Length: 212
Image (cartoon, rainbow, N blue to C red; front, side, top):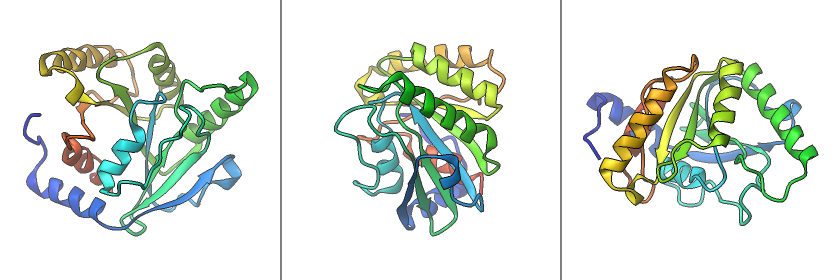
């Protein structure tokens, strides 16, 4: 990975934020259960098996803070994590590409997520995770359509970049960035991460701490 592109003080602020307390707060199944919007929120979204739990754990340094479901797509709650002792909410959306779930359940979850995205005043950014080995898939385009419609700023984070040759990762990142230029709510910078190797984690922390 390239050297961090953020100022040293911002990298350090991100490190300090995520080295503080990190706790699971609640799993929300309907909008009435959302906590009071009294602090900045960032949200992580992506397909099942894209590595959301691993990335959240890498960010916080807590190996078991976010847990992967034994069955991909079975997690159907908005999972809230308190970061830094009340400084930030990190929200883990259910994985898209639901496994063994009825169309009625999928429709209900899609409605909940749309309502959350459109109506959460404290939400600053959605980080849409994309597997570097696969690039953008149909489901990712559907999520981006939803985010564009909700007018919520989102940023693509490539995961598992250690599994792909660097030249291929750079090509994928360039292809994704080109597609994002046609989307109104998309942040232009594509981030690259590896939870296993720790690559890009400091940059992602620095990106998030800038919202505080």
